[in-house]
Image (cartoon, rainbow, N blue to C red):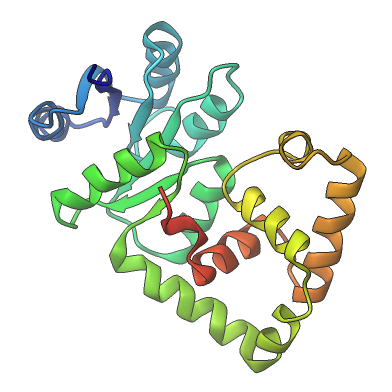
Length: 219
Protein backbone atom coordinates (compact mmCIF):
# COMPACT_ATOMS: atom_id res chain seq x y z
CA UNK A 1 0.00 0.00 0.00
CA UNK A 2 1.51 3.32 -1.10
CA UNK A 3 1.55 6.28 1.24
CA UNK A 4 -0.71 9.23 0.49
CA UNK A 5 1.11 12.09 -1.23
CA UNK A 6 2.26 15.01 0.88
CA UNK A 7 -0.29 17.81 0.86
CA UNK A 8 1.37 21.14 0.05
CA UNK A 9 0.02 24.69 0.31
CA UNK A 10 1.78 27.38 -1.74
CA UNK A 11 1.99 30.94 -0.37
CA UNK A 12 3.44 33.65 -2.63
CA UNK A 13 2.09 36.98 -3.80
CA UNK A 14 3.21 36.34 -7.39
CA UNK A 15 0.84 34.15 -9.40
CA UNK A 16 3.56 33.18 -11.87
CA UNK A 17 5.76 31.90 -9.04
CA UNK A 18 2.90 29.85 -7.61
CA UNK A 19 2.17 28.43 -11.05
CA UNK A 20 5.78 27.33 -11.50
CA UNK A 21 5.89 25.79 -8.03
CA UNK A 22 2.63 23.93 -8.67
CA UNK A 23 4.01 22.42 -11.86
CA UNK A 24 7.19 21.37 -10.05
CA UNK A 25 5.48 19.86 -7.01
CA UNK A 26 2.60 18.19 -8.83
CA UNK A 27 5.15 16.45 -11.07
CA UNK A 28 6.44 14.55 -8.03
CA UNK A 29 4.76 11.20 -7.28
CA UNK A 30 4.90 11.72 -3.51
CA UNK A 31 3.43 15.22 -3.21
CA UNK A 32 0.57 17.36 -4.46
CA UNK A 33 -0.49 21.01 -4.24
CA UNK A 34 -3.83 21.26 -2.42
CA UNK A 35 -4.14 25.05 -2.37
CA UNK A 36 -2.61 28.47 -2.95
CA UNK A 37 -2.57 31.80 -1.10
CA UNK A 38 -1.29 35.24 -2.07
CA UNK A 39 -0.62 36.59 1.44
CA UNK A 40 -0.20 35.54 5.04
CA UNK A 41 -3.80 36.10 6.08
CA UNK A 42 -5.11 33.89 3.30
CA UNK A 43 -2.42 31.33 4.14
CA UNK A 44 -3.84 30.96 7.64
CA UNK A 45 -7.41 30.55 6.32
CA UNK A 46 -6.31 27.98 3.73
CA UNK A 47 -4.26 26.07 6.29
CA UNK A 48 -7.23 25.81 8.65
CA UNK A 49 -9.52 24.71 5.82
CA UNK A 50 -7.20 22.31 3.98
CA UNK A 51 -4.88 20.98 6.73
CA UNK A 52 -1.79 20.71 4.50
CA UNK A 53 1.25 18.73 5.63
CA UNK A 54 3.68 21.39 4.38
CA UNK A 55 3.33 25.11 3.68
CA UNK A 56 5.81 26.64 1.23
CA UNK A 57 5.94 30.21 2.52
CA UNK A 58 7.25 33.31 0.79
CA UNK A 59 8.54 35.76 3.42
CA UNK A 60 8.30 39.17 1.73
CA UNK A 61 4.63 39.77 0.87
CA UNK A 62 2.31 42.79 1.13
CA UNK A 63 -0.20 42.82 3.96
CA UNK A 64 0.48 39.98 6.38
CA UNK A 65 4.01 38.85 5.52
CA UNK A 66 5.35 35.32 5.69
CA UNK A 67 7.14 35.81 9.00
CA UNK A 68 3.94 36.85 10.79
CA UNK A 69 1.99 34.07 9.06
CA UNK A 70 4.57 31.48 10.13
CA UNK A 71 4.21 32.57 13.75
CA UNK A 72 0.43 32.27 13.43
CA UNK A 73 0.60 28.80 11.89
CA UNK A 74 2.91 27.67 14.70
CA UNK A 75 0.09 28.36 17.17
CA UNK A 76 -2.53 26.23 15.39
CA UNK A 77 -3.67 22.98 17.07
CA UNK A 78 -2.68 21.07 13.95
CA UNK A 79 0.35 23.06 12.91
CA UNK A 80 1.79 22.34 9.46
CA UNK A 81 5.49 22.14 8.68
CA UNK A 82 6.66 25.40 7.11
CA UNK A 83 9.49 25.84 4.64
CA UNK A 84 10.42 29.44 3.89
CA UNK A 85 11.12 30.11 0.22
CA UNK A 86 12.82 33.49 -0.17
CA UNK A 87 15.43 35.34 -2.18
CA UNK A 88 17.06 36.63 1.01
CA UNK A 89 20.05 34.68 2.28
CA UNK A 90 21.24 36.97 5.06
CA UNK A 91 21.57 35.73 8.62
CA UNK A 92 18.96 38.11 10.03
CA UNK A 93 16.23 36.63 7.84
CA UNK A 94 17.33 33.09 8.62
CA UNK A 95 17.35 33.69 12.38
CA UNK A 96 13.94 35.35 12.42
CA UNK A 97 12.33 32.63 10.30
CA UNK A 98 13.70 29.89 12.55
CA UNK A 99 12.48 31.76 15.62
CA UNK A 100 9.05 32.07 14.02
CA UNK A 101 8.76 28.30 13.80
CA UNK A 102 9.78 27.36 10.26
CA UNK A 103 11.44 23.98 9.79
CA UNK A 104 13.04 24.72 6.43
CA UNK A 105 14.71 27.60 4.60
CA UNK A 106 15.32 27.56 0.84
CA UNK A 107 16.54 30.28 -1.50
CA UNK A 108 14.48 31.03 -4.61
CA UNK A 109 17.65 31.26 -6.67
CA UNK A 110 18.70 27.71 -5.77
CA UNK A 111 18.02 24.60 -7.85
CA UNK A 112 14.47 23.25 -7.65
CA UNK A 113 15.79 20.08 -6.03
CA UNK A 114 16.53 22.10 -2.86
CA UNK A 115 12.83 22.81 -2.33
CA UNK A 116 11.78 19.23 -3.03
CA UNK A 117 14.37 17.92 -0.58
CA UNK A 118 13.22 20.45 2.00
CA UNK A 119 9.56 19.44 1.67
CA UNK A 120 10.38 15.77 2.12
CA UNK A 121 12.75 16.41 5.03
CA UNK A 122 10.44 18.59 7.09
CA UNK A 123 7.37 16.47 6.35
CA UNK A 124 9.24 13.63 8.01
CA UNK A 125 9.82 15.71 11.12
CA UNK A 126 13.28 16.99 10.23
CA UNK A 127 14.73 20.39 9.39
CA UNK A 128 16.30 21.64 6.19
CA UNK A 129 18.59 24.54 5.34
CA UNK A 130 19.51 25.45 1.79
CA UNK A 131 22.93 23.97 1.00
CA UNK A 132 24.14 27.44 0.01
CA UNK A 133 23.56 28.60 3.58
CA UNK A 134 24.62 25.65 5.71
CA UNK A 135 28.38 26.21 5.48
CA UNK A 136 28.03 29.95 6.10
CA UNK A 137 25.87 29.46 9.17
CA UNK A 138 28.33 26.90 10.48
CA UNK A 139 31.24 29.26 9.81
CA UNK A 140 29.44 32.06 11.60
CA UNK A 141 28.92 29.86 14.62
CA UNK A 142 32.56 28.75 14.62
CA UNK A 143 33.85 32.29 14.22
CA UNK A 144 31.86 33.48 17.19
CA UNK A 145 32.57 30.57 19.50
CA UNK A 146 36.21 29.98 18.61
CA UNK A 147 38.37 27.26 20.15
CA UNK A 148 36.88 27.59 23.61
CA UNK A 149 33.54 26.31 22.32
CA UNK A 150 35.14 23.02 21.30
CA UNK A 151 36.48 22.58 24.81
CA UNK A 152 33.10 23.46 26.32
CA UNK A 153 31.22 21.07 24.06
CA UNK A 154 33.18 18.15 25.39
CA UNK A 155 31.86 18.93 28.86
CA UNK A 156 28.16 18.41 28.13
CA UNK A 157 26.70 15.02 29.05
CA UNK A 158 25.03 12.61 26.63
CA UNK A 159 21.67 13.42 28.19
CA UNK A 160 22.21 17.16 27.80
CA UNK A 161 23.15 16.64 24.15
CA UNK A 162 20.03 14.54 23.65
CA UNK A 163 17.85 17.30 25.09
CA UNK A 164 19.49 19.93 22.87
CA UNK A 165 19.00 17.75 19.80
CA UNK A 166 15.29 17.35 20.51
CA UNK A 167 14.92 21.09 21.15
CA UNK A 168 16.59 21.82 17.81
CA UNK A 169 14.11 19.48 16.16
CA UNK A 170 11.29 21.63 17.49
CA UNK A 171 10.03 19.58 20.44
CA UNK A 172 8.71 21.35 23.54
CA UNK A 173 10.03 20.63 27.04
CA UNK A 174 6.83 18.71 27.78
CA UNK A 175 7.22 16.55 24.65
CA UNK A 176 10.87 15.86 25.44
CA UNK A 177 10.01 14.92 29.01
CA UNK A 178 7.43 12.40 27.78
CA UNK A 179 9.79 10.98 25.17
CA UNK A 180 12.67 10.53 27.62
CA UNK A 181 10.41 9.52 30.54
CA UNK A 182 11.67 12.40 32.68
CA UNK A 183 9.99 15.33 34.42
CA UNK A 184 9.65 18.69 32.69
CA UNK A 185 11.74 20.21 35.48
CA UNK A 186 14.56 17.77 34.79
CA UNK A 187 14.49 18.65 31.10
CA UNK A 188 14.67 22.34 31.98
CA UNK A 189 17.70 21.67 34.19
CA UNK A 190 19.47 19.68 31.44
CA UNK A 191 18.74 22.46 28.93
CA UNK A 192 19.95 25.20 31.28
CA UNK A 193 23.14 23.29 32.16
CA UNK A 194 23.96 22.58 28.52
CA UNK A 195 23.36 26.18 27.47
CA UNK A 196 25.50 27.47 30.33
CA UNK A 197 28.39 25.11 29.48
CA UNK A 198 28.21 26.03 25.79
CA UNK A 199 27.69 29.72 26.36
CA UNK A 200 24.42 29.80 24.44
CA UNK A 201 22.03 32.74 24.62
CA UNK A 202 18.92 31.31 22.95
CA UNK A 203 17.29 28.79 20.64
CA UNK A 204 19.09 30.03 17.52
CA UNK A 205 22.39 29.02 19.15
CA UNK A 206 20.99 25.53 19.73
CA UNK A 207 19.92 25.30 16.07
CA UNK A 208 23.35 26.39 14.86
CA UNK A 209 24.99 23.88 17.18
CA UNK A 210 22.65 21.19 15.86
CA UNK A 211 23.69 22.05 12.30
CA UNK A 212 27.32 21.82 13.34
CA UNK A 213 26.71 18.37 14.82
CA UNK A 214 24.77 17.17 11.76
CA UNK A 215 21.62 16.60 13.83
CA UNK A 216 19.37 18.47 11.37
CA UNK A 217 20.46 16.51 8.34
CA UNK A 218 18.64 13.33 9.46
CA UNK A 219 15.16 12.92 7.97
